[in-house]
Image 1 (tube, rainbow, N blue to C red):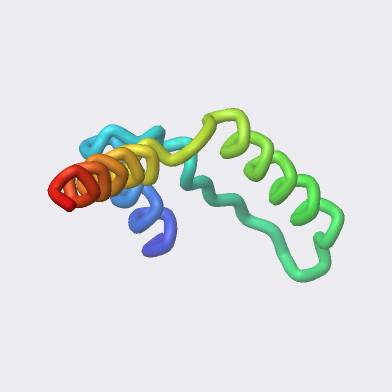
Image 2 (cartoon, rainbow, N blue to C red):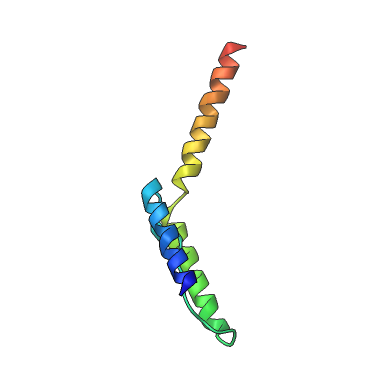
Length: 75
């Protein structure tokens, strides 16, 4: 299945850049399985929440703070 291959590829990319591949997950359910969808979406959301903040966001935020600090020191 193409979607499953793409998810696996995206997980490999995340591993390469140092982000937990568990942030991307895939499951199958039909439109008639609303309760299952809710359960899986909640499970995935909890998994991501437990993994913590995105390390790239933290890295970019600290770089931005460093840059702003250097600019304010020059003034």
